[in-house]
Amino acid sequence: MKLKRLLWIVAGMLAIVFVGSAAAEDWYPYPVEVWNPPFDMTSPRTTVDYVPLEKAEKVWDICVSFPHMKDAYWLAVDYGVVAESKRLGVKMQLVEAGGYTNLNTQISQIEDCVARGADAVVIGAISFDGMNNLVSEIRSKGIPVVDVINGISSSELSAKSLVSFGEMGFKAGEYIASLHPAGSGKVKAAWFPGPPGAGWVEAGNAGFQEAVAGSDIEVVETKYGDTGKEIQLKLVEDTLEAYPDIQYIVGTSPTVEASISLLRSRGLSDQINLLAYYFTPGVFRGIQRGQVLAAPTDSAVVQGRVSIDQAVRILEGKSYLQHVGPALYVIDSNNIDTFDQASSLAPDGFKPTFTVN
Image 1: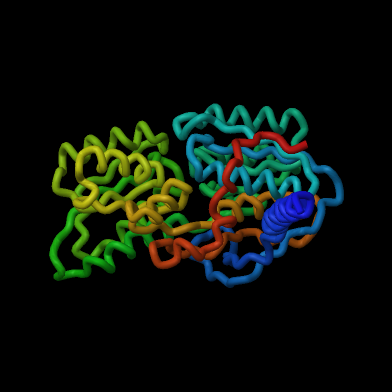
Image 2: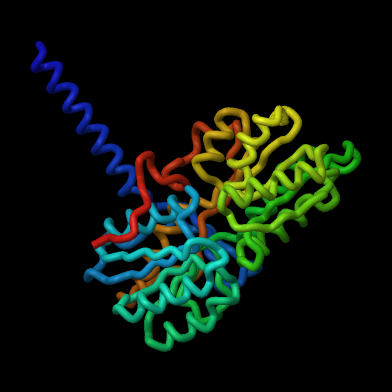
């Protein structure tokens, strides 16, 4: 009986491993939006199911560059590029610049990648305009460049795997604006869009401001800053000193994650509501526990996966979608237990991974 029980336990463990592996491999088909003409967020969109290649024809060497790995959002993108590189059978080297103030570091890291012989480059850019000369230089060598997550303004890009952060900001603003329509009574909100100069931040700010215009949400403070938690915490502390009567803190996921403990320590959790404009594990737990109202998700893992598939398709001369991003939707208490977590969050236990050989 003991042996039979042990065999059942082992079989159960193997089944769990198999199911987890299958779920990771079978991430597709996935609903995405395709912009046409590409590289213009105002272009018409169509919705299609994204299906990647089964395997790469050869072991391509792909360089991936991120602004940093300081928060769980980029960990999710990291998981996406790592998992898809392994699934397709290509090499991947990831470099991270250490923060949004380090544009020159990101540029030099990418130059080093190209110098060592990378076949393609995937860039999560620090600056919307600051990468354009580098993109031109890389493309002149016949090397594909894929823009992932953040946005680059260059028209010489090979492809984009990203969503409209303008819409991400709009969805966050729309959520609270619907709770406080015009005439319902003014409420004060503080808004923390992220690092100044980053393309996704400028777009997110424009979308948020548009969504709350005409509602009874009064944005009394807008503070920009790097997405490190310590920096965001200081911005929130300064805002609470200046505006102790605010009722909403809306901003980056690190802003919201830092604010949870700060509000608890000051006894303000019941007075101030929190809303993020993108999705991370900390925001996920906050919504589960009733500490965070909501956040839109851009399926960050899928964006990472798609960027690798795009690069491989271009290298192999195969058809590809030039400008694609997952369809956006908002997570709140109504769907927190039913949405597809694997599309937005790295699995538990996944640690920053910089190479796939």
